[in-house]
Length: 115
Image (tube, rainbow, N blue to C red; front, side, top):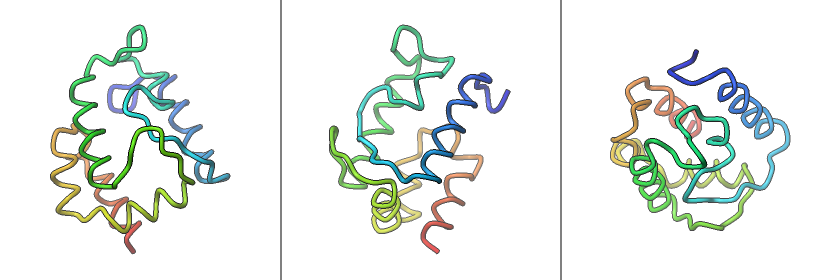
């Protein structure tokens, strides 16, 4: 399946993406397992096998974007904050430990968001 994830994870991820695209819901910032993680095959009893790395990524992004756990914002506001605050240089630092970084998808998405 896609990049080592299960069919269930991919279906859950795609459903979340579709919801973000079509309804711009309020999202809550969390520094632990979230709705995307809920179907991840690397999660066992609510704990991620890569929890330490994920926590580092969450903290780096929260700092870069000025987010706090428990904060809520619309998907539109989240995208604006990302476009305003995340430079390509900051992206390189904040996303350094992520295995997906080398695929270039997030970098391309950031460039598109910035216009």
